[in-house]
Amino acid sequence: MNNNILRAEKVKTRTQITQAAEHNFRLRLQNNIDAGRSHLNQILVNTLGADIKKSSDLQEKLTAFYQGLGVKEKKDNVLMMEFIVSASPEFFENKSKEYVQKWADDQVEFMRKEFGDQLKIAVLHLDEKTPHIHFMISTEIKSVKKYKNQKGEFFKETWSLKADRYNPEFLVGLHDRHAEWNKKYGLTRGVKGSMRKHTTLKEFYDRVEKALNTDYDKRIEKVIDTLETGLIMKKVSVDEVREKFKPMINKLLKQNKALREKFNLDLKQMLADFSVEKAKLEQEKVELERRQIEVDARRDEYREAINKDVAQAKQIEKLNAYVESLQKENSRLKDKYESTNPDLTQSKMKKDNKNGIHI
Image 1: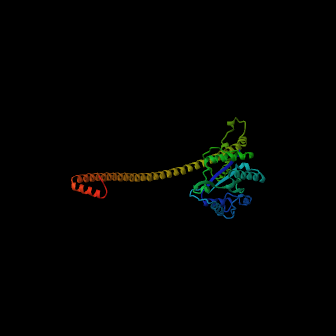
Image 2 (image 1 turned 90 degrees about the vertical axis):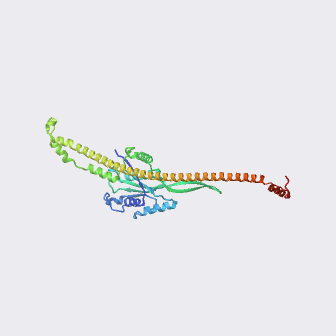
Image 3 (image 1 turned 120 degrees about the vertical axis):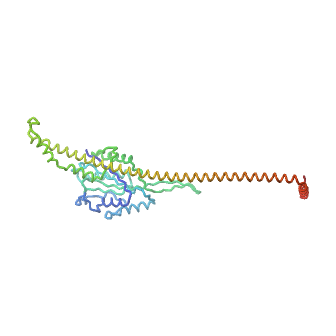
């Protein structure tokens, strides 16, 4: 069964973009490639016009592109997504150059349908063990913000970098659509819902290749030599057993070795991913504890401020009550003084008459 292969990686730094360019454009020595066939590689897409002979030019062109949109980058932004598209090694066996080219062109068409103008780079590699294509996708996204002022209502377009769409649900759907797209080539989708993280194509195929090329002849010979013809009722000779069963056993052992290699590789990757997630959770726990301390400190500050305001309000209330009592006492003393001094009362009446006041 020939499997359809689609891998995704997030590219978060410009250093990673440069490293990808060095690999994709063959700007550094690599043990896993056949330099004698590198001339067969093809640049299928290069909308940024990156110089394929300068490793840093891709990230420089991408930076200029983002700046031209007015993107304000954040520290944790995903700068690009890289997808690797391929198929099982057997799929490419005895295929003509024209057939592989048609397959490659179809993959570009699929990625254009999915990502449109965000498809920036596509490189077909034919100098490794298995043909494959590297796609690099930009992550800009446009949003429209509405605002009002005294002149009316207005809309403003802004750009930012966002890779939220590339969540597990989206990637599973993308793999489904890609597998459906390639049904015409007899390719089938891999296991759906797998939780394992994939290694690079090179690492995977190198391990499988090693397992399949292991020679078990000596081990099988040793087992056969211990057999006695009596065990099979003397109807066949040891040579016949060797001739008929040795190739089959050899093949089964190779396949079993390949599966065990792949399982061990995936298991190690899962354990490594678990360790990473555990470390992240520990870090998040520390951050939450730090934030809780800040919240508690602020709560104490607010409580102290509120208590202070309440105390001040009570003090003002007491002062107001005291002033009011003084005013009442002053009025009472005044009335009492005037009632006990008639001369003051007569003087006050004469003064009022003089001023035109009649009582």
